Length: 522
Image (cartoon, rainbow, N blue to C red; front, side, top):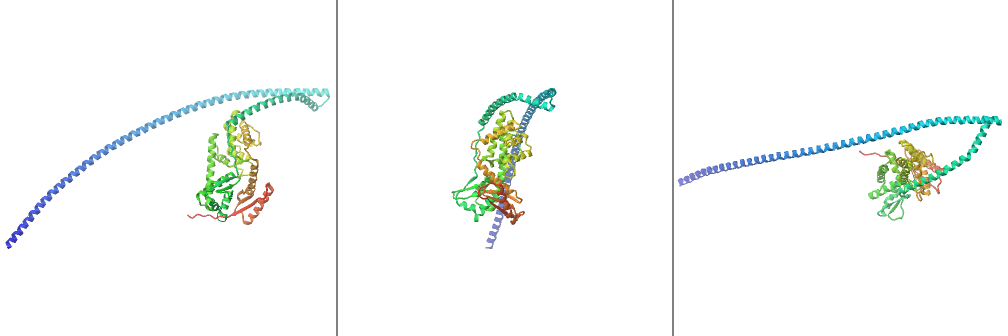
């Protein structure tokens, strides 16, 4: 029994050893296979990497070649463009040289003509001097003869002789003068009618009828209450800040902005439209929108002035003059829009000057600037003629422009063809039927005068005539004017208006003194 057990154990041991050896052999064979497979894969990867590297080198070479071709092409185009520019520059230089030579020849020719005329003039002056000496000598001989024959003194003889000569010559002189006056009148009327016909037929202008109110549309009538605000706070802020009269009545979905000043009225209308679209209507927001709109309007009038001057092709002009030209859109004269009138005068003057042999560009420039002072009359004292001449002198405008500013109101004689064309065009534009309204202009003058009286007092920041001229609102500097002085100022302004202005009814003088403290949290 024991032997059987030992024999079985031996067999099992031997079997285990044999199995272990067989397993080890199999494992070793598998390891070799795996090793060979790994080496094969590594070699395949290496081959693939080599292939990719070759492709990358090829692609890089292609890209480099393409870039070189593009560079060579761009270089060639740049060379061709440079050659074209050089050729164009050479052509321009040649054209300029020819122009310079032509102008030099022209100047030399004109100089020769002037020199010849100067010689003739000197010769004529010598002849005239000789004739005058002979004339005086003959007069002295005649006087001497009369003295001896009539027993008269030299002064008496001279008086009698001159009276006889004048009496004898007066009829002939009058006949000659009347003859040439009639001829000049007939020729002048024909020429003037021809020029006016040509000018008016070649220019057709529109007439813009200016009013004193603007309508602001509301989506619903509930907005009227928001515009008025609690206890009228919003509408008071609007009227005080913008210097207009806001009329809210029973008209559905509409409020009125009233002011004689077109510029203030336009700013107020735009401010209200933005506030209504925004929906936040309260004093701080009102002031913010108003300042934004005011800045935009200043930029717009400069841009409009630049466009108008460029369109008219009258040369370079100072930016301040461009701004004043743009601001003419918001001024009216006897109900006629000042900018429309100015453009009409400029076009007509250019056409007339061209027909009469003058400089049409200079005439158009003078026409554009002849009423430039009207842009300043709301902010400065004095007539628009004096203000316009002063600002044009300040920005170095020519004497023709200055002469046109003064002459179109009869304050100077007309010195040039261009100035005469401007004066004729101004009269033609103003005299057109329906172009102007006297009643409106007298009202505008009255309210402007009221504002000027209020603004002339020391310490006044702003003054607005509102409510159709029946109230003047005066905003003073709170640091300079105290409460007692504001009461005294209101009395002084009212007294000055009584003495200087003709008006129906009564005018309310409202002096507003407001103190503000502003600081920023940073």
